[in-house]
Amino acid sequence: MDKNLFEASLTGNVQALNELLHKDKLILDRVSLTRFNETPLHIAAMRGHLDFVKVLLREKPTLAMSLDSVRRTPLHVASAGGHMEIARELLQVMSAEGCGFRDQDGRTPLYLAVKNEELEIIKLLIQKNPDLGREILQENGETILHTCIYYNSLEALKLLCQLWNEDELAMVKDGNENTLLHLATVHKQVQTVKYLLQIPSIRTNENSVNGQGLTALDVLDHHPRDFEALEIRTLLMEANFSRSKDVKSFQTSQNVTNLENKPKGWYLNTNANWLEKQRGVLILATIVVATTSFYSGLHPPGGTFTNSRDGPLGNAVKTEPDIGPFSDFVIKNTIIMIFSLMILVVLLSGVPLRNKFCLWVLNVASVCIIFLVTATYLTEIANMSPDTWVNPTTLFMCWIWMLLCLLFALSHTIFFLTWVVKKLLKARKSDQIGV
Image (spheres, rainbow, N blue to C red):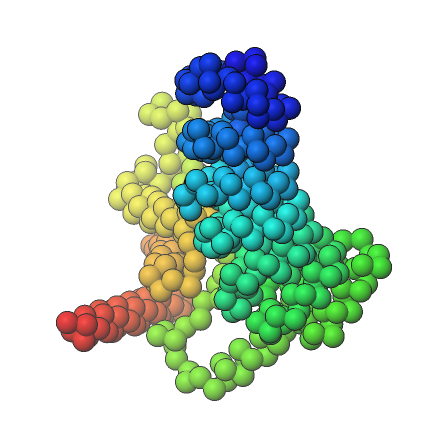
């Protein structure tokens, strides 16, 4: 930037600016071609030189959208500095979209005006573009209302809340699902809490929780207790706000009542929450079964010939008289191990166990494991007995148990297919209605 132009901008010397423009009519045009931190308009807006700004905008209005080294427009500078008249002049030559331009930190002129609670500039900005007051400022869902609370700008909050529907104010949340009341409570802003509680939708939404499952009253329990916290606690309790544990207890009692009034069902109305709670136990059980089958495969019944030359680990003793029973044992044991590992993968994947298909797969796989364990036990008992003789009572109990396993798997499969058919028919009926 020309040295004389810089000094004129710094002092707001309009006469010097006019002389420079008279000598060199392209001096402002060359500004955009020069490396600089701020343009003359940035400097004049920062120092509050209104007359100097007027001349610059008259000679070159496009300077209003020029950017400094951190991508701020002159309107950013004027808004942060509280120079209302300069902001007014800039808004006259800027578009509605231009006054919402974001710098490299994602901050708009409205953000900077709210930060310093420049109410008159806030009014100018939202008059130019009312959508600025409803814009999402950050990727985490933060709005300008959250900014008001972060900087304790209560008057700015009151002004901007007028741009929102009353019901929307209760549902405005940031990326951590904190409502405006959550944030005001976290920052212990007593006056802000009082103002928010005057809004009916916020007052009636007393059980709203954030991403951590905490109500506004819960938040106070995680911060030091002082006079502000005590006063806010009193305000919330007088407004009938509750803690999350009290809300859950109330909801649980309602759910129990609703369940008692619901028609009972076996599969189509199954609630698999109990299975979710037992996920850890199921993981441990499948690990034990998989480990046991793995050990049995390496240490088959009857042991091995350790001095055998046919394999590094030795041949199984059972292969000596007849390899057929041993192959049968290996197949059953492998299926048990694979099915156990399959169930373990499903449990570790985090798939919701209340999913009907997932529940059916786990049931059938578990029944297969139980069936094969029983069959393998019966076979090995017979192989260890003289002439493969098995006590009739043992044989009867094993066969009955295996039959029950098959019936259990078949019944679950039938009910699962029934559920699938009903879903498909319902979807087809909906499509026909839509057509």
